[in-house]
Image (cartoon, rainbow, N blue to C red; front, top):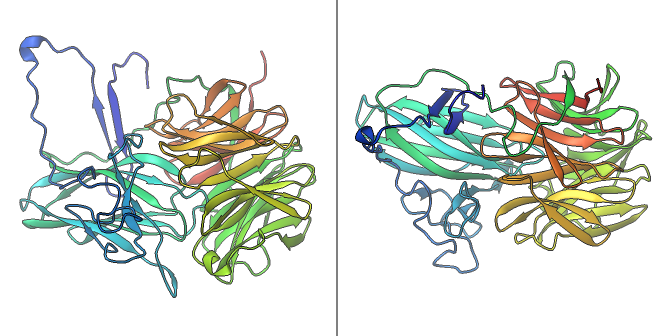
Length: 490
């Protein structure tokens, strides 16, 4: 946006039904005209989820599944998958809660659960629906979020990647005096968070417009980079994950048959699947061309190492196969030039980082995690590890050097996710600033933003020792890969 414009607040929503933008000007209003405009009444009861306590009044060992004003399809079950959580648009202040919509299964795998409310509407009246949605899924597969109004599906989000709270806005015309609002969710692993749900009457329906995020947040400068974008041939989505010093890029892509690994060398692509796997996710690559990742086979997730054309299984020892049927419960995320591998695994106590050195495995947790949730994403040749963890106020990045953890956040970020580190100690990842997901580069104590030109969201995952950076972005049509290199000096 041009710097000459006076902007106080930008609210944007991208949906399959309507895409809208509202701009609130900071233009001065004389006192004689400064008559407060009456806010339209929100038809949704307890749309900000602040009426109830965090803990269930019937079982102090559980988060509260009883949400005033809403019907929760799983509230009566012991294994509740929809409940109140202390993670919100308001940065997780106490008793400023959101609703977690977590996985649920039957014998055939993930199933839908839902939360709903019946609204009093006027037939023929026009309304605006808005809400904030976050997703913890860092390996998006088989996650679906549906929005229903009056029994009609108005939007379906499929395989959403990791994102902070993002606002979505829709418009509809009421058909009757009672209109049901329903949010349905299905996930194989991870969860959605829903907050600040609002339905208000409007005088007219918004036009079908899209507002791209600002080029970079005002709190940190933009990195000086040259971007090259790419797609795996015939891919629906391309997610670049890592780059070695030769410039070889590993990652995964989606086509009509599912998810597969890829290796990009120059302009050539090689695609692959773990033998007999239904899904394959390639993540880290080292200078020897060895690749680590995860795959889905026989109803469970496993971890692999690819050396040339040979695959080997490197599962974290002791994981319960029954647990693995329902969660992406382990993944190799990166491998350094000494062959040391990092990643994460889940057990009945939580999510933990792991380090594999030779045949020996060790696990670790960030000491500041309050939800037993630590993800290790990247490792350099010095053995320094980066990742993120969940604390009281959301998600934060960390650098692990030996047994010492240094936690950090991008300035003014709502969450920070560290994903890669090189031998110079440069760290990359992405963050959410309240407008969009953006990449970052951290060099010492200095941060710079990484935004692919024209992108609605940018996700950065890998950096090599030359400073080349890879990741993927959403251009409003699909996810595409990119490589970013330093601008040549004049």
